[in-house]
Image (cartoon, rainbow, N blue to C red):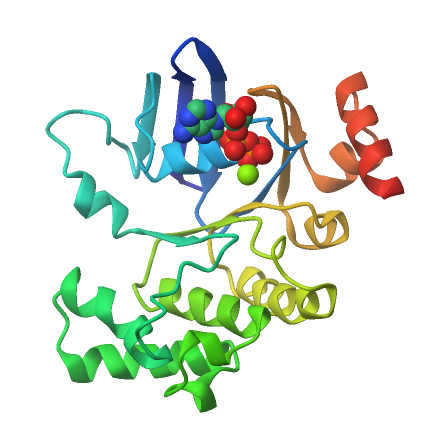
Length: 245
Ligand SMILES: Nc1ncnc2c1ncn2[C@@H]1O[C@H](COP(=O)(O)OP(=O)(O)O)[C@@H](O)[C@H]1O
Ligand SMILES: [Mg+2]
């Protein structure tokens, strides 16, 4: 299978603080990769480098065979191929659900309003939020907001969906409804890169688990390998801590 995204020797520093060091990994078409690791290990920074919300200090990001850090490459164009779902939803609070899901399509992809609405409704159906199309974000629960955020990202027809701890800001009773949507997307062959603390979920859906610690990838592999039979002491310690809580 072909690599959709390939990260090569990526590094990122904030001032003298080196947050990512020589990170290498790839995401293939249709693959679900879960990124795990302690708080502060650099997971969000890595995801933000992948979609160029942060500029890497070194290394390369290859998207469908093209080096997107090449100065000739159009960053805006590249970003439209990535769907991003954040911990804090990041919906436009002044816009209702349907407008949240159409504004990017119209502005960035130059779709007509009718086409944007059709796409938006398709994905609001997928996440079970179609009946809330006229609601404002403040009228929704956290789980509902996150499902709208997922629909909004999907409506852009991205090549890859990036999730940064999409359930970490949710009340426990709402985690399930969001994971259910993500499970479905995973089973339908979507290419997904997911930062998560939900180990059960990761074990179930991931084709590959990448464990990060202090800005480096310590170990990666099939869930059964990394989660059940970890090879490195740091992975073992992390899992012991995480699975206990
Ligand atoms: N914009 C920033 N400026 C300075 N330091 C940052 C910035 N963003 C993240 N960091 C630092 O980078 C490290 C990794 O953070 P982060 O990527 O958010 O980790 P994780 O998502 O794994 O919890 C932390 O030490 C954090 O304080
Ligand atoms: Mg984070």
